[in-house]
Structures are given as structure tokens and as C-alpha cells.
Image (cartoon, rainbow, N blue to C red):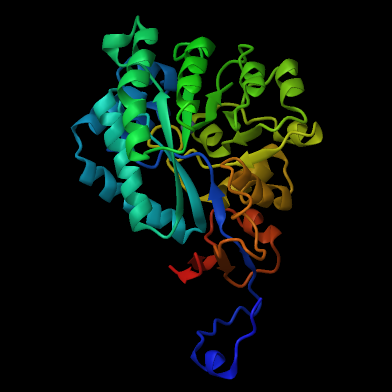
Length: 363
Ligand SMILES: [Zn+2]
């Protein structure tokens, strides 16, 4: 590290961090931050007793988001997403993964990915883009998921390769959505253009797909609220990161992923917000850490690691982000006056971040 000379010290901005903590900015490795409309009307339906799946059958859910997205322009998507991104940054998120997946046709999927690319150009946050090419089936493909996956492969992947629109690929591998064979077909085609796999799996059912994704070499498997013994065995000691989304469990009343048992069984876990308009409308990584402690029995230090260095590893970024050390990017947070690191998770629902620096620049 170079030492400043007296002149440089004179010109330097001095920030008083007395009684505050300087910590790495949070890394949110699973979000759907680009979307075209909020869904608080469905929230009310659920409060009146309808389930997430019943609302989806009534034309709500992902299909509702898709309809709104298809009519929005790329600029509208970009502008609304930028507001949400800035909110996330103000709460301490310095690196964020954002997925497509509400397009449900090639043109709208590309529109989403181009909006994400534009966010990369207009923010100091480190942004990674994921092509969620198999999220839900539009009605016209309801009985032909294979054909839909083919279309995504033939019509979208070449453009992604040409315009550099994505870093990762994702699919919703679940009963009623996409089978493991369809998922693997999309992953294999995407891997040919350099996209590593991060897959939604085991949210509602354990169908024996998770071990196949781990042996396929998925970078992360995400959700994992339902886990069988075989799933634990497959993940234990593997290089695949288990990305857990407790805010989604809170919001739609589904079980929390068994994080404590995962850690005890040598599974690397990351925490993420799953920020999306239907099942997790928050990007607050401080709240995510609180939920991981309160509901999943993680210690605050474990939740903090899972929201920084492990989440960076879930995006192959742990060599440059996720901790404060020489040669890494200066994505730093200065907290408000707090007595300890554990206080962030303990005093839940509050914003404990006073200053955010991304790439060394004050936000
Ligand atoms: Zn998700």
C-alpha cells in the first residue's frame, strides 16, 4: 500500500469513522430487479387466503409480470430498475446479480438483458446479468415446453453471444415449470457461449434434480427450501454454492431452507434477496441477514459471510469482491454508530449503513 505524502493528506477527504465499522459492501447474488410493475394487488389476494399457486392459475404470478413487461419499453425498464438499484445501494449492496425471465419471448428477454446492460453502464455497482431463459411457460407453449426451450436456444443465445448480454444462465427446474432434461439442454447450449449455470431448484419439491445439477457443475443452486438426504449428500463438499432466499420464505409463507444443517454438513451457502415483485419485494440485504439468523439459526457472522464473500463466490467474483483486502475492488460500507457487527442482524428492519463507497467512489 502506498503511503500518502503531506500534500496528498492535505487534499484528501477525511471521513470520521469513530465508533463505526468499515465492512465490505453486500453482494446480492440472486435478484429479478428489472421488472415492469409491482404486484401489491396479488399481495392482498394472498392475505385474503389465496395461495401463490392459485394466484398463478388466475393469470397472476410470473405471467402477470410478463404481460406488463412485454409492453414496457427498454428505457422504461431501465429507468424503473435504476431507482430500485440505487435504493439497494443505499442499503449497502455493492454487487448485484440481475436476471431476465419475465420476457417469455425472445424479443422481450433481449429487452430485459439490454436494460441490465444499460444499468451496468450507469451504476458504480458491480452488476452481473443472468439469462433466465426458462422461467415460466407462456400460454401458447403450455403443452410444449421443449419447443419453448428450443426457441430460447436458437433465437436468444446467438444475440447474447454477439452483444455480450449475459454472464450466467438460469432455469426454474420445478414441477409444472421446466424438467431437468429441459433445464440441462438450456444449460449445455448456454455453456457453449461461456455462461455458467445458476439454477432455481427445490423451491416446492425435491425431485432428484439437485444432484444432477451439482454433478453437471452448476455454479450455484438457488432456493433449496425442500431438501432430501440425497440432496444434502450431493452438495456436501461440492463446489456448488447453495444460495438461500429467506425473504421469499417470509413473504410467501413457505419453509426456510435448512441452512444450519447445510453449514454443519460442509455445504457453502450464500444469502440473497431474490428481489422480485411477486415473491420477495425487498432488496434489503441487512433484513435478509436478520431473517437468516432469526429463522435459519445462522450466527450474525455466518450471515454476514454468506452475504459477502460466499455470495461473491456464487458469481465467481470472490477474487475481486466480498472482503476488504489488498488488490480487491474498494466496495466498502461505513456503518452508523453501532456496538458490534452482530448488531446489524439483531436490530432488524433498520438501515445501519451511513456511507457507501463503490470502486472507491462515495455514492
Ligand atoms: Zn428467483
